Length: 390
Image 1: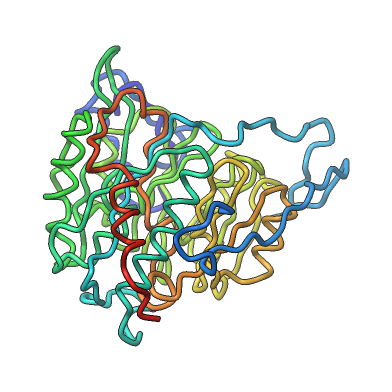
Image 2 (image 1 turned 90 degrees about the vertical axis):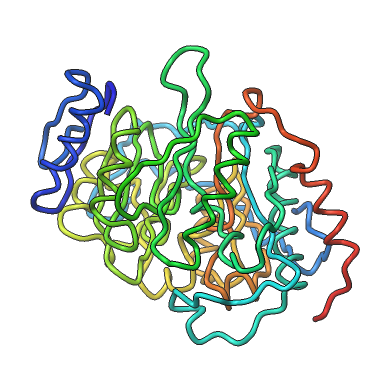
């Protein structure tokens, strides 16, 4: 890792693998320390029934509020001041095709689900895309390219966007290496789009690595996950391309991606965390790095209803309707506007929620050239012209 600071991994032997990748990438620039690898819609879619504003509540400001995992919120700490949304943010998305179906059935929702309605799924997708643009960000659309690639709508696995490594350089797009055979060819379409937009496209070159599904950021730290679908070899290969402070977290099922284990909520200065699926000392290291008072617990049964898969964008949380009411109420109590999205097809049947449907590219809009055919307006008009099959 160039100029990076790695922070502990929780599997024996991973330190050597990751440190080796870091040393190869950066020479003397990186350093390892610590226990492991280093230190340290409301604007609605085409169908108004798909979107519902749930609640907004003021954050509590008790001077000594008892917080999860046995830590106290410091009395002197003020509530964070964070912008509503960065209008230079871009979200890569790809709608379900007109004959979209469940092909791989590779998660605990889809494996026994009834047949999906493609038209209904497309309108659910549009409701999310419009809610994102209503918040001030830009959606870039990869239209359906191959009806056999039924996983394309779940764009969190399109790859991951990284900053340029040299002044004036292109932002980087790190391609995935997917676990499920029916998703392996998706990168063959995301890569060319990324090049047209103006990214430097990079193949990590080894193992299984499922892109942004296994990446999160909070308070200047990158969290990288493995143990669900991403394997150790894939994580090690991807790790060499990440700069700055990194925490490596091992997972267990049912968290097949990191975004099922935790969700940063920057506006609220909290992380929703399911401690039940974090292996080894991962939770202790999260508490040590961020403070236990910032870790807000959700249960394993709640993540099976996608408690950590809503999409935070500024002070809004775009949450699938299946998220438990307790979690929606908790996020509202943290000062966020919860916008509920009906996702009977994309989430309740197919098993991917609003966070799974996007690849977030922060702060890059001015560095990109977006072709007209990849703007949301083109796809919106087509979807809205289609009848609803119920």
